[in-house]
Image (tube, rainbow, N blue to C red; front, side, top):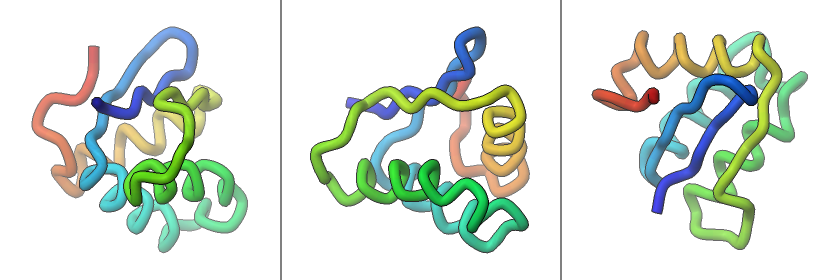
Length: 80
């Protein structure tokens, strides 16, 4: 099962390994501290902790994570 990242209009889907990769890239970015709850959710999902498989983001958060995914080639085809 994949984690759904959504801003209410757009969706990205990442598996557990991709969630960890994305969390690492987010943590070392300028938003790592500010968006700690987003990073925590990605980490907890990636380490198989009991968290929701849906992460609701702001448009800004979604766009930033989407750019990280593209920049670091975390997923080949993650959007719908």
